[in-house]
Image 1: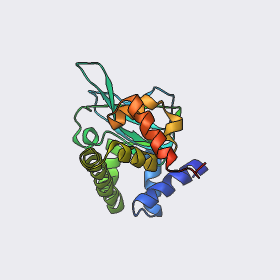
Image 2: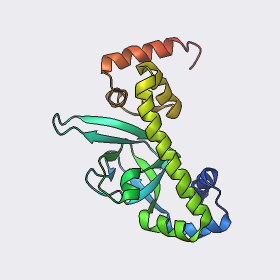
Image 3: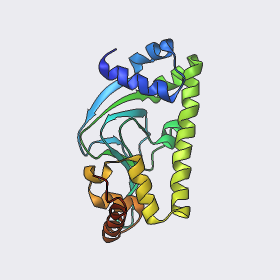
Image 4: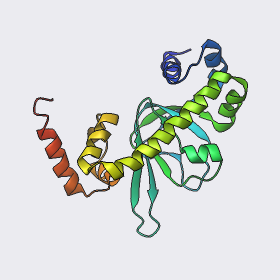
Length: 201
């Protein structure tokens, strides 16, 4: 395996109990893709056919309000995270969202067909599938609960914990959209959060 594949498969091993044979048998199915800023991993109204693992870059999942034509960010994915429209991927129904690269990015991806084949023939890959489903269920439920139980500032802090350098990497209005607030409100929150960490660089 190349150094790149070493990194990818180490992450997969950390995520699920895959042995050497599991990894070897899956190598032929994982493909590399370089994506430019603004490229789409998946489009709204299309079935999401691939599961991606982000090697480099950051992606946003968003939908476009048909009444206002406004984009509303739902989630961000960055390095060492899986990127996919999971409901569309497993149900084979059209995706409700766009998934867009927010900077020049690199991913490794596997198709639904090839991953399903691994599920059928390798028990550890079937465990991977279960863990993947649990992971995306947790993401969806946590996102919902954040809007119920957490303040705007708490949600902003949680975003920084998940993606430490996101503020430097994407425009502020994307973060405002994700948090469901205006840009001036985000600016005030950022100042409050930064003032509470005076010793941090």
